[in-house]
Image 1 (tube, one colour):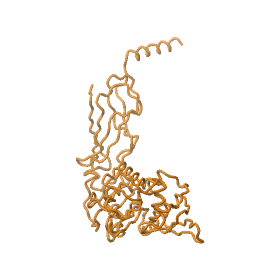
Image 2 (cartoon, rainbow, N blue to C red):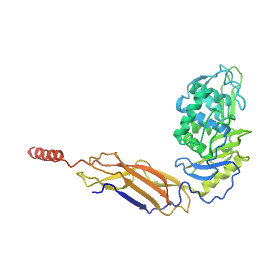
Image 3 (tube, rainbow, N blue to C red):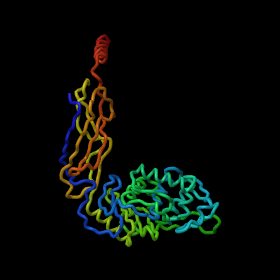
Image 4 (tube, rainbow, N blue to C red):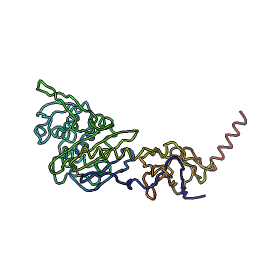
Length: 378
């Protein structure tokens, strides 16, 4: 009986993968920015990049993390009092006054549509107890996401030498944020009216992100600018079941270059299903079991953007755990499946048994005899 079973499975389907998630299609565009990444949201596959891992300031695109943490740690219905230290923060503002009360939802619209630095500070103090406390939460979340080359100091992105990210990290953060339905709704909103306490007018907010106004399928996410960071933009669009996230840092023509990059992604790639979560990937022998083998499936579906050239053969490697012995239960993890593009792994999933495999023991056989005997006398 094998202690380790390594099975190579080649699915000859209507599509294939050659290359890998870190090998890009031939670059037919030029984006004039210091840092660039185009990423597909669900697979996190990078489709286009330039200086993806160079640390750069990101200005108000910082507020993507601020909004994500607010949604994870607070409730939209929370009533928040504007603290004195948040009123009058320099830069873009929604003109909050100390003592003014707003729902967290209204503050988030002020944060993401009008880029209110005062809204950012108010949210940070409400969630983190202080700007410093909130920055700790921001950095913790960044590491959880895998944005390891990012460091946050402020919730708004006003310049600080120790406040930076990379185009790749910001794409990861933005992809996670866009998976939150409340976040996605806010950043795709064009206009919003929120109260202005003490005034006879309401605040009329208009989204500064031209992508949602001018690009077909545009649905997010955030602009940014400081003299140090230059013009920064995280853009998003969805077409034919493919959600793209584009990041440009220090990009003079950020909207036009982002549109060009998104169009390149949609024209070059198609979302392709490799396999579904419940697809059988084979059977494996279990040592000492009553049954000869058990079926196994992957714990997740795998779908990714592929070019036409990449659609030829799928190479998957199934690795079964060593010392696979009975008993095995339904849902038990028994190994992993790795998907390769060329010679590089692009995705992995856990393998789980769909069956029980009872140990072929003396106790089992005695109980089997007793059960048969009981059935015979009934």
